[in-house]
Length: 341
Image (cartoon, rainbow, N blue to C red; front, side):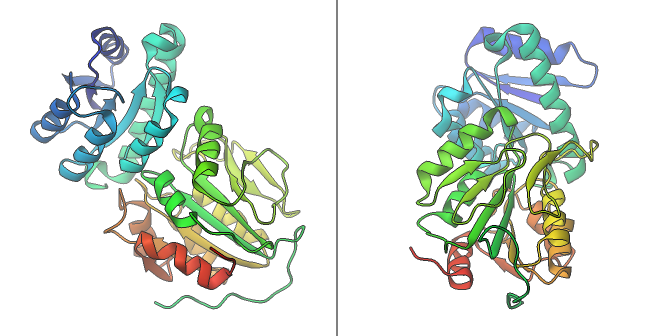
């Protein structure tokens, strides 16, 4: 991959350059010292991937990410000193279109940090390849009344998202008290080291309780449950949630497709599958499985998606019964499932 580095700290930028230079698969295309310079360089010489710091002069990493995604879209990985100390900035950047976050190698420790960054680069390369490069970037069916199973949960809302997902999820669920017999399960592409922070951040945005899913958890009524592992979230025949490393070859981890297919196979009650903004195709085939199982399916529209990859793939498969702009997905949930604001 051709990689751009946006970092105003010379030692950090050099640490990133050395990690990349030590591989045969990647090359440093340019180094920007300010957010504004990164925007300009992306326009003049667009890379496959930008390693974006959060705190820079002229434009910070959040606004630089937003500008790049608007003007010269490409994959962006947030690379910053201590991501856990900048949770709000991280999720603003993810909402603006960044794919993921990791720590700067120099500050994480050269050996460990370099290995973590290279692992991220391998994942980014798979995502970019599967999505086709930087160019990636009807009425609802009635809910069926059937035999319901699972500890007081009668309606399951399954949400999948990637690039731009955290903010989209918060906007979709914000201000909503779901009915006490409804459970919301979220599969967001995010590194497991930051998943607990995502759950805490989302809890600050919502009025419903939010919890990260532990292996073996049951579906919890009235709760937003968040996948927290790089393994895939699954729902078994006993309606217990858990994690499974298989399929190992999937670039998307945790995979929305895997969870949606589990819901289609095992959940016999009412369900709504929602596929939000994201790079690639993950979730499209799973959404189709949900539709074929008689569940209601929704995809976010192009105009309001940070990256119209995953929803577009679902639309191309005719997996979505409804294609809605983000501001209308929350009201649709309220009118279909009930609850209160």
